[in-house]
Every structure is written in structure tokens, then in C-alpha cells.
Image (tube, rainbow, N blue to C red; front, side):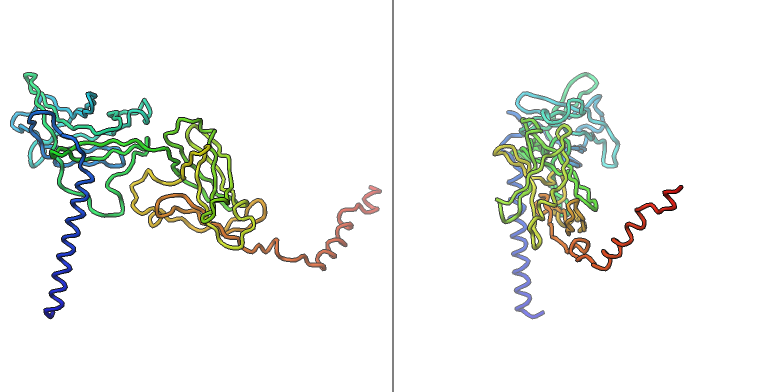
Length: 358
């Protein structure tokens, strides 16, 4: 390699390192909240062996026992926020590196999850994490949890995803003094796509409406043609609690079309609108991962369509609809076949004299 190419390679590596550093510092700023992990006064911290939130709400925690030589009689993890506390029991597990205090628990939103759901019920806000140990004499010791320095690698899934039961986002964050905390954010009013079925004569969509105070029956489904906000088709869905089902109005969407059209779907109530999409997922690129086939559909009205129901890069639900030539409708009638059929019809349909005598 000559000197010019070597110099360019060194500069490229330096630029890549600077870019990676800027991205890392930006992520740290995003994940840092303007709050203190410990209250006034010093509190010892425990470095976590593992701290993660999986499937949108499952907290996995493992910290080293502060005094492995004398295991505590009881240990628990306490969530604190503005005077409210929730706690779970920490299990004691032996590990090659020493005794660990571990917990695997499902986090629930205080207002949006079902009352019978088990697990700590957390409201919106930032919750402190505290490990409380009790020895055999009844003395308690409190420890904060240090923020883990490892960052999630870039991959096909997001580092944090909303809870599939409530739509709330539980996310590990760090305080300004370096403590691990949990930030809870409730979902906005949204329409979640649960799935859709492709048949030979229709497309049936199933969804769920989140965080709405209005009666569900007040909402209607609206198909909006992409590129023309005035071209809309309304559908009344069938409701079962907060879940709804509707058939895509393919005949109305394809009426008068000479080429392919793309339609987006939203739920509407007055001026309130909620785009239908897949958001309660950890998939980073929905259109690339959640791929769906094209389907030729013959509608009840006699139209023959090429239909592609899919997710956009942003995760919203869309339907590409294109008319196809229909041989059954477009082929002109055969005069010879009509004459033959007409001549044969009286012979087979009218009783003969022998039949009348019988």
C-alpha cells in the first residue's frame, strides 16, 4: 500500500471512531434523565451482572450479593417513585463469581393493565431501583444499582419495545449520578394491527384500540388513498371490547381504477384519528422482516384484483390494489353457443307426450 492510500485509510478510521463516539455520547444523553438515583446522602451501589428488559415488560436483574460470606436472610428489589413503592423478592443463586441476587418479573402499567395481572404496577414516571437486604438480626441495608455500561448492539430488533398488554414502554435509564432506573411511558391513543387474513375473495383485518376513553363503537375505519386525502372509503368495524374486525373494501377501492393504488387505513372519531399499524413489536424494519405475499382476489362484485396487504417501513398497514383483466367478464358471448343452448333447452325442460301419458 502506497503512502497516499495509507493516509486515506488512517483518516477513514479516525472519522469512523469520531462518529462512533458522537453516537455513543448521544445515546447516553438520551438514556440519562435529570434525576438522582439516590436520595440525599450517600448510598452504596451494586454493579449489575445483568440488567435487561425483554418482550417489552420482563425485567431480568442479577447483582452480586454485597456480603457473600454472610448471605442475607431476605432480599428484595424496591421500585420507588414520589412516595410510592412496589417490591419483589430477590432469589439467591450460587455463581462461579459468587452469590447473586436475581429476579425475573413482569412489569405492569398501573392504569392500563388488567387488575388481575401479576407483577409490580408502575405508573408513568421514573422509578428508582433499590436492593434491600435483611440480616438475621432484622437490620436492613439499602443499595442502589449502578448503571450498566454495556450498550445493546445494532441488530434486527430494537433495544426496547412497548408492552404487548398495555402498550406502555418500560425502559432502563441512568440518573445523572450514574444509578440505574426504570422510566415508564404510557401509550398514546393508537390503533394496533393484530393481524390480517388473506382469502380468495376478501382481506379480513383484526386490530385493537388502545387508551381511548370514548366508546369503541363511536369509531369507524377509513381507507385513505395515498396521494389523495379526499379519496376515502369508510367501513364500520365489528367490535368485541377494545378489539375490532373489518373486511377491506376492495370493490370500492378499485372502482374506476386503471392502475395500482395504495391505501392507508385509520380509525376516526370526529377529528380524532389513529393510524392502523404494528407498533407493539421490537422489529426494527417491519417491511423487510414481516413480509407478506401478493394475492389475486375475485371480489363478490366480480372484480379481479391483484392485492398486496403489507406494512410500510414505519409499520403502518397499507394495501396495494390493482385491477386485472377478468376473462369471465371481458370475453364476449359466443352466438353459436347461445343458439345451441336455446335449441336444447325446450327439449330437456319440456315433458314429452310419453311422460304425460304416464
